[in-house]
Length: 243
Image 1 (spheres, one colour):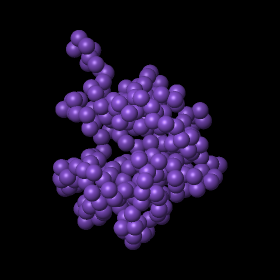
Image 2 (cartoon, rainbow, N blue to C red; image 1 turned 60 degrees about the vertical axis):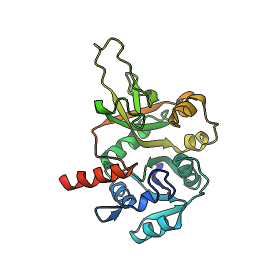
Image 3 (cartoon, rainbow, N blue to C red; image 1 turned 180 degrees about the vertical axis):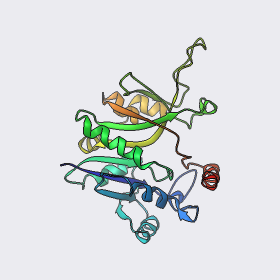
Image 4 (cartoon, rainbow, N blue to C red; image 1 turned 90 degrees about the vertical axis):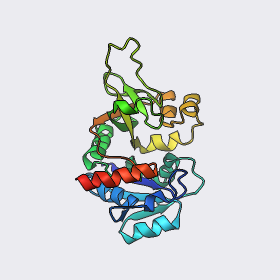
């Protein structure tokens, strides 16, 4: 039976929030929250933190995580996990859980893996939740539209789909930055050059769509804020305080 790994990319040099993986949230480094949740995912054979900085690695070692040191020159988290995936011989599925998603639900990660196990032709899976109308025009909030089978048609920072006459009231989805990959597809994906739509939207998942890949979108409920800015970190503290 093929094996499954979760790889958590965690880099030091975040533009908007330097040293983000080690910022404290409820007394723990942010990346530890993610690792602990991923450690509760069933059917996974390895949970690995992929980083380019020894400060992150040392902190991860202290709380018992497996760590893979990766190149500091990777342009994206996908390239970082692909470097790790090269060494995951015998693994068929690689799950990419961002190191800034402290409220990720283990059950959701399991569903992303299950989609790939159940459909051998499927190359990628990801997730989305209902979009808050207040975020419709927010370019930092990525939207996704799907076909009737739940496969992604397009991802955009723009408000999609457009309700031209204002009477269709379409359900809108916010894309969540978590992915499942067939390992072979992931290793091929990072060899491809950036595509026009990817460059335009600054969304690398569009590269997969432009190459004809099928991306299954698993719908879920909002779990809590991801951390991209200092304001997000404050929101996360408030979110935890209410639980």
